[in-house]
Image (cartoon, rainbow, N blue to C red; front, side, top):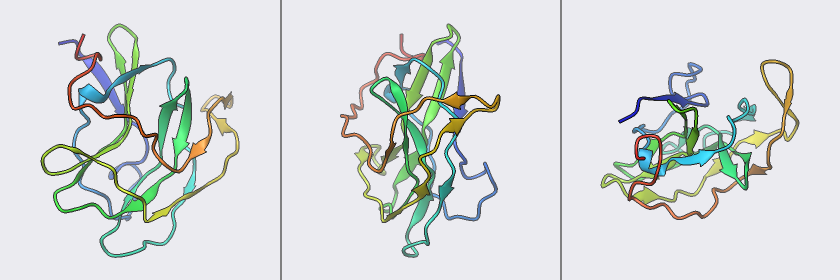
Amino acid sequence: MRRVVVALLGALATGCGSSLPRPTFAPQSTGFLVEVDEVPPPARVEVVPTRPNEQAVWVDGEWLWRRGRWAWLTGRWVAPPAGARFCPWVFVRGDDGRLWFASGTWRDANGSVLDLKPLAMASVEAGVVVDADGMSETTGPIVHDRPHAKHADAPVVGPGNP
C-alpha cells in the first residue's frame, strides 16, 4: 500500500480551540476518495448561528468538488442520532502527486451513510477567496445542501486502492 499524506482541512475539534459542541469523529474511508484536479482554496469565513437545541452539534463548512471546481458547503448545526459519527472531509496527495478528495460523511453505528438535515446554517460571504500569497482563487458557488451523489460502501480506485 502506498503511503499517502492526509490533510484534514477546516477547523476541526482541535483546529481553532472552539468551544462549539462537535460531533463524534471517525476516520474517512479511502473508498470515498475521488480524484480531483487541484488543491482546495483556503476556507471561507462563516458566522455561526445560535445553537438551535441541546442535541445539536456544529459541523464546519467544507469544500466540495463539483463540476471540476471547488464549491463551499456551509457549516451547519445538526442533531445526529445516537451512535452516529462524522467522517470529516479530507484532501490527499498520493506519492505519485495525484490529488484525491472525500467529502464529509455522517455514518450510523453500523457504518451506513446518513443524510442529516441541518437545523441551522452559517452565514457566508460570497466574496473572492484569497490564498496565502494574496492571489484570488477561482471557486464555484456557495451551496447549502450536499449534492445527491450515491455513496457506495464498496471501495473505489484511490491512492490506497489502485
